[in-house]
Amino acid sequence: MQRMGMMIGLKPEKVAEYKRLHAAVWPDVLAMISACDIRNYSIFLKEPENLLFGYWEYYGTDFSADAAKMAADPTTQEWWAVCMPCQSPLETRKEGEWWSMMEEVFHHD
Image (cartoon, rainbow, N blue to C red; front, side, top):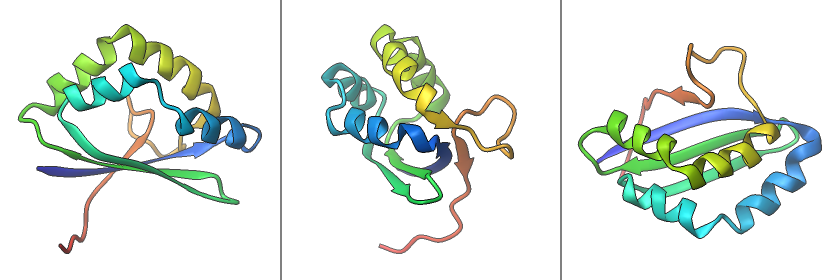
């Protein structure tokens, strides 16, 4: 299992909409997350800075393939089209990233 964390900004005028969307995530989106071997997925919001922190545990063996599978899913693409206008990527993100991936520097069970 691999723990993964990521961050992105949230536009201030979209906070309520983002919370509403994530209070009722589409069932097919949730099913695709599970089908891509992602478990224990959480998104946290830090206000008033409006930073989102995402965390999940990846139980698969080929994250790139699973990420591509998710990205190819039409329902997931629709979901992202609804959510992405709410988000504000960090200026320091790596090329090709939307959410900025984070390095795990400590863990304790």
